[in-house]
Length: 354
Image 1 (cartoon, rainbow, N blue to C red):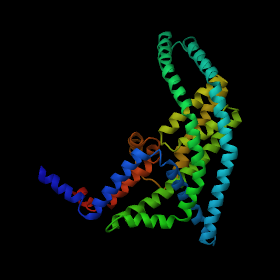
Image 2 (spheres, rainbow, N blue to C red; image 1 turned 90 degrees about the vertical axis):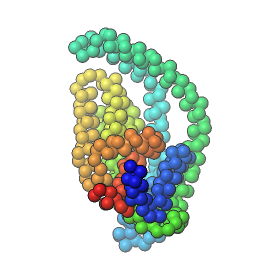
Image 3 (cartoon, rainbow, N blue to C red; image 1 turned 60 degrees about the horizontal axis):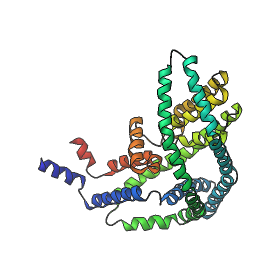
């Protein structure tokens, strides 16, 4: 038994590079686990800079020099960021504030609707089930109230932190974009010894990540705008807030679409009641989700991430439990990274054969 374990260990760690690479992975995982909140502005800045590199390369295809393409890419980032900061974020904030103020009324309307369900749908819901539901809701209200008080106390500190991030964000993006070659070379030089496996992993990940990140941004924009048009046509309340949530929900495969559907259905139900308008709204929304999953995603990600849906869902739960929001956000890239490491690891082929 010990001999088999020893042989397996020698196959897995068969040279110096595999040992160094394993240490790098462990250090990176520990750093993300304990310092993800602190590193948030750096992570977001790296993602945006990575997107801008793709835009820069696209601009260079029109016979534009690298320096001019860099300046134009950063100018696009500043213009889009300013538009969001001046128009979209205040609009979302106002609608979020309105939603919070409307919560007591919405909650009462929801309770009234639930109370009427035994009379409206006697075959589906009984009075005993409704009473059990009300008991569960009342037990949860106290904990929700306590969490709201804690959140309001820490709100001032969070606001100061967000303002600091807003100031640092464009500065970090500027350095990650304009000085990325020196930063990458500096990181590579830290790794001792040969870097053959690291180069293989990076080449595969660069193609996968570029397709995934840029594809996800495109999907967010298309789905978000489509949802905004749909909600605006129906006059649904909190259109901007719900549209942003629908757009961002594509970041969490499968689970995100299900989660964001709940507030849309509840708000639509309370606003329109059970009738043709409500059914049409929900039907068109489900059509949008179906088109996203069956048409848009295959077109955008045809060459991006080749992972089984079960693997993707497992990655969402595993990395989400390990690293929180960033684990969910990077679940597919992390799963792709594991796949790339497995394909590039020396001795993997012999392990598969054995």
